[in-house]
Length: 303
Length: 241
Image (tube, rainbow over all chains, first blue to last red; front, side, top):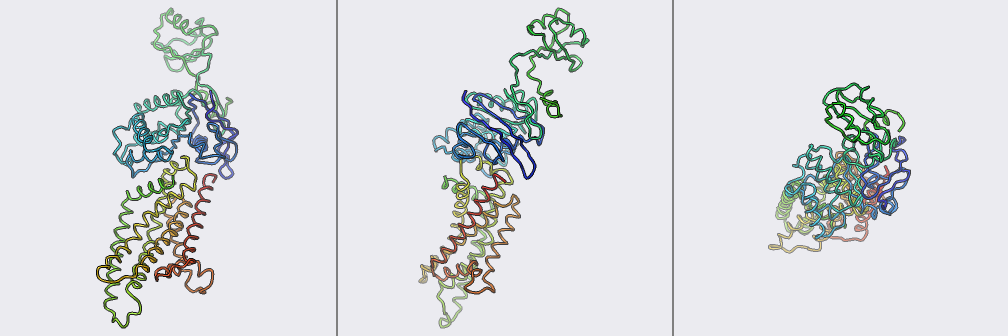
């Protein structure tokens, strides 16, 4: 897979304060990379640097073979960027605004017309074309922000808190859109919401005070960790006693996190639970436990 | 890309009540001044008229127009950068494949389209007199050119202050301060001194009287280039700032 975006030792200082410590990132086609971290961890600063909005203090950024710092105009053609605050012109209508966005990225009239129609459909903005942006609800403004980031069909899409201000149905639509976009592109998004990153991304970089404390896949290749819910609470010892179980941890009264012994399949676990006469309500493969990782990483534990 | 940006900036400006307000109020005030000038000129004894009507119009009407441009330009230019920085919409331009020079030129020429409309108001008022009298068109065109160059210089100054600060109020105050300063520099200074040369009223006065001198044109062009250069420097610094 070709690398769409790479950074080497990218760092940023504001005055004397280091906001982003040297970080190496890479993005391939099909990747959805999540930047996760508490507020003030440097997520937005990294994304601003990747978009060309902010010059780094050190390091390099390469986008589709072009150096963003040496040849910014060429490199920026490949980028679509949604900042924390969607960059909207409140006094324009949605159609006018998207028309301008398309032209700013060098599309001609015909291309702009087609791109606008397609983007409005993708972002669910078909009905809002003639409305003033200032009168749109926050959710629609956020979707319009997303629309301006993808209208020119960029290869690298940078999204700062893309689902901020959306209702649950819209969040799902945006997640699906991101998945769809990522098939032929690379997406980097930031969030401080764990389930958001878990649901959307295949890779995650966790940041703590500007420092990357974890960098890797969300779904580990050797899946051994499962979440099990039973209809009644059972003693932890009894669960641990099952032959497929290596370790168990009680999460709530009737749900457990179970690590399987090597060689055991989840079906073995299900059979054993049923054989014990317990009502199995849920058996779900757990992706890498981001929450634990996040808390461990951001409270000073090692990654 | 610069023409598209300029057109975009102008179109957005014309969407605001501000632009129409400036044009409307400007038209009222200039019409008033125009009628007052005519009345005074008519009331003069022909023997005491040392200057023609066109001269009177050049001095009175274009004089007021220059003051109005001084007042309105900073209000127009704070929108371009200061407000865009503040409400985040500037990112749309800074993350697009455009150089800072392209962005700045687009915004500058966008405002100049508007200034052209404003500059044409006194000229059109004077043209209405063609039915009844002979006008010195050369003088009026020179005064119009002077007014337009002046608005270009003021716009460049306004844009520079607009790039300086995210607070539109401070940006406007800065522009007014400098514009008033270069309006007053020729008071109490030597006719040939550099300080005197820096003030715009004497350069504009030549054009108001129909004198098109290369040195005056150069003054206004240098004013634009200097402050646009500073604005460009600010925009470059802002990315690394």
